[in-house]
Image 1 (spheres, rainbow, N blue to C red):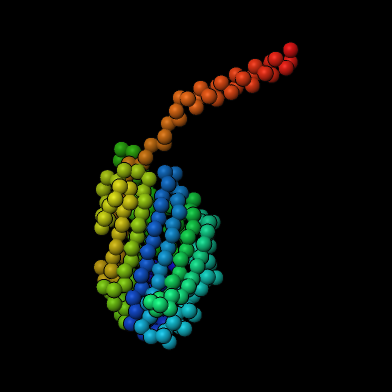
Image 2: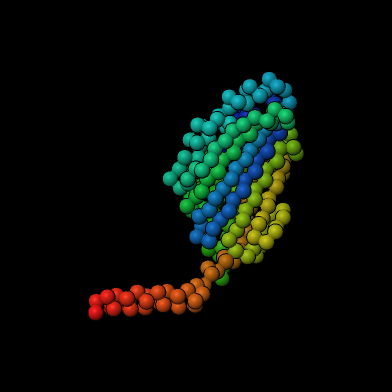
Length: 220
């Protein structure tokens, strides 16, 4: 479910003094394919709200499946559950994608504008747009958090992330910080494909010679 839809559906359905959290972890491979895990959860203040939340389609497996159904991705897991200990309701989605750019054509990510383009000197430039959200109706802009984690397939050269650890970048924003929208971006130099060691060729050649030797001997 796209982030913007999550907020708009809830705030226009009923008044809640709640905070919504969204976490997206994405791994991009050298060929542009990859995997994404999404986890969003909502905390309610009143037990009566949990009944309403369970009826929202953002926490319904069939509805979530329809949002992510696409020729460009392969769904691996969809889960929804309620944790009564901390009064939260959760949804988790995990899938593989064949091309990072193609995510923008998935219904759930409409307006997110995923891009992975060629940069100067053999570099790559990655970006994703986080659309603006409607605040109010009890949502506290500083309490609702969005976190996006990216593992990029190369040495990171430049970025606007909050934190960096090797090829891992993390962006974290409160609802109020997103404002009219945020564009996250980074440039990196792709990892080189590991060269095949010489011993592999020698071993292959030896196997071929042995097979030819026995074939020739058998014919004789």
